[in-house]
Image (cartoon, rainbow, N blue to C red; front, side, top):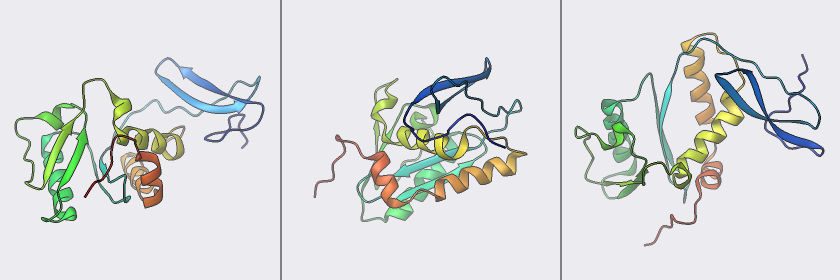
Length: 179
């Protein structure tokens, strides 16, 4: 079945448009000028959450997919990052101020320092660009049959991103590695 929307790519004589099949879902798509793009809409909701960390210098990454967000899952993610990095490597983890990032019960390993960004500044957080990329290329405008399919889609999306892509997507001028 062919659709009028051209997802995730620019074309000559195209424009970026918002699709809105109801008041609670709006997506950006590329579509031929003058057309009214359409997109699938799911009206039932289940969620999976990806706790992710990326080194924008070398492309190494760590992620855990969870059914919810809370301090326990964040502690698990921090332990995993710490173990993957090794005790001789110090990690500076850039975070927003989500509740599970600043909770008093957060257990931060000795080889990790948390760098909290100012409130309401997602443009400063390199991982936010990754979330946008994953949504636009792998997760948006699809209908999932069940929770397992959502979970698998998140796993496939993360695993499809190469080290080079992590470096490119998460690169920012203000993060530089100095010895």
